[in-house]
Length: 310
Image 1 (tube, rainbow, N blue to C red):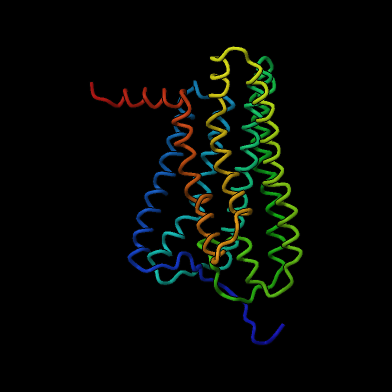
Image 2 (cartoon, one colour; image 1 turned 90 degrees about the vertical axis):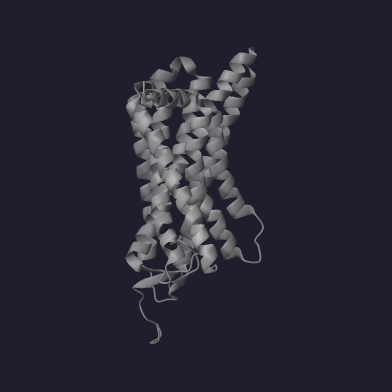
């Protein structure tokens, strides 16, 4: 290693490089979205915990999704907001690595929880007589814990491989958070093993879960089409329509991010697409479930009636 290389202790997150008036406008808009994300997911989580009628497997997994969305947004957005209004946009290297690690864990866990939710809908529609046996509370707990543990262990592979690298610059990350590919650019050593690990883990998450979700909904669609009653088909589809919308948002964003043609400024394009995972998807998920779920709307209406003065 050359003598002119220095070990880095902090890096600069370039974020969105815009003029100050636009930066303050973005700060206001993104702050509002962040507040709505926390409020919406917090309300969903609260009513699921407090109303015993929502103590079902479907809403148990929805509560896991709400926790993940709040955690994912809180991991990335506050630092992005601070950097929009501060001239100094530095972050210490250890917190940067932790931000990267947690971001990957939350993303991978959400991916697996969406698969579990699709399996729950498959059992509910295709095997309704065995639903309570298959989706027992013990099974639900095992599935949820396994999703978190599996995600943690898979992302731990990336962390171990990254910590073995020497980092000596450059001192800038052209992103609004410590995204793994951007962090690897700071290394002054061969990162081919890291790139291989990213591809290998990427085949397991999200490609594997996406195929499982497609398989589950293919079976669900065939089951719904076999129902003779139009009312029965409508009711069966309504039980999984909200989850299908959330799945479409999550995996649709991934497809656009990795398949869409690159613009003249690919790094800026990546920042905008990353906003969907960090801010827009977590904000929209509780809105989708509250609008599509009659149970959630019913609980909210009853809660609002109780708050009204007599």
